[in-house]
Length: 231
Image (cartoon, rainbow, N blue to C red; front, side, top):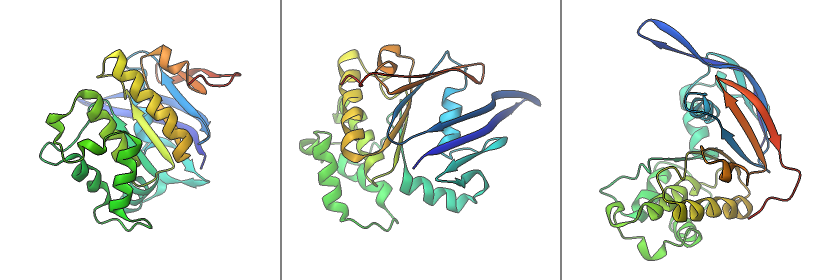
């Protein structure tokens, strides 16, 4: 599933004043790639990611998934689309504190019809992120790196075709950050899902297949690696 962004602009209204955050962005993303979005704070990276994931609608332009413009869909259709096709990973882990690891993974599956056994899928994904032994633990009983692994597992539980990650290593030390990024690389291969992530860490970005550099709401450079990605 490719994503095609056509002339996407986005404007925020603040205290009666309009601020253009994104300016006529046009680009395409392939699920065969890991793509990094980099740029200074305020360049529009997170807003762009939010629009691609249909968490918000652009002021103008269109976003196509396999030729379908999702900006024209109604909220109910978008909600179903996000649940089935997109997995979100955020800098803040956003785990429900009163639920165990296993119960946090079950939340995205509630009220969802699936073609797989939910219990088996939870066990499978916990094994992939090496947290089977922690399935009955509460988030407060986990380290930061473990909590982010739970968040990644939750994002993957529905077998989405895209993972959208906003600063997934931003709250972690270098060791745990490396572990999380390596996990994303592995899951990209195993789960066959596209990955688009925002980062301030240029060392991580350089390990992606493609880097989009953003500044002042525009893409100022689109760099694709010519060599095999280092893992």
